[in-house]
Length: 368
Image (cartoon, rainbow, N blue to C red; front, top):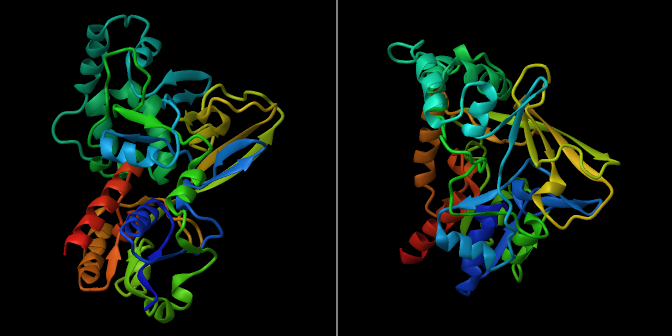
């Protein structure tokens, strides 16, 4: 066997595991069916702008060791995620904070004023919430629900909020301060030069083969290494023997505009049904030194998953959770295969949690 590890997929989990193994002197081969490395964090330079090709990715973490790890490869800027929400011709700050409440209600000047409105509206729901709509109203009241949650959520899931389970919204942050920072994490930023630069540095000195599908010649690839690190869909690995897991997908409409500044913010969420897209991303605002007379924007449309599309969001209802558990039990029996990442674990991950998971799994693997 030529390699200690064959890594299937060059996203954050695969790249982190490969980097750690190389540092330990292991022989590693990374393959990816896409024509580029980086998975969904891949960025492409268009008109001098680093475009997030698979949707907006903002790195944020409370893990100091993860932050130091990614900064050992590239420098991160001080980008702070402060999205705004638009419904019709109204603009609101996200997440829900005093700026939001003061815009919604004319008589809100203090946290006590905001709580008075929210608590009064929450009384509408008595007993245990039976669906997402009731859950949201029980947390933030009907006004905020209808303006900033209902339309966005229904577009995201292609279902009425009354038909969605309550657990999808277990909690909604209500910040009684004038702070538009979306995340509470201590560390936050964007790699200067884009995420592709980060992954290229992580995989520096490691053999990488792109446009290479593991399943086109699985037996051959399995023979190359002592162990396989698999980051693709878990049901695909087992040839969908128990059935297919459900996913939500996205469609993107990229446009190059002859404008210096189109919307004044990196991310604008569209929370109403007057448009089909859920958000518009203006990529140049993720970095601060982009001097160009043009801008690149992306309209993001939620979509029902169909074969051939990218898999973005797990559908964590009872049926899919039970099916995923059955596949995980099969995965445990695969002695020479390590399953990691959101696709292989059927789990939604933030980027820092993916890296932390790779740290933990690699440490366990080395210690066995």
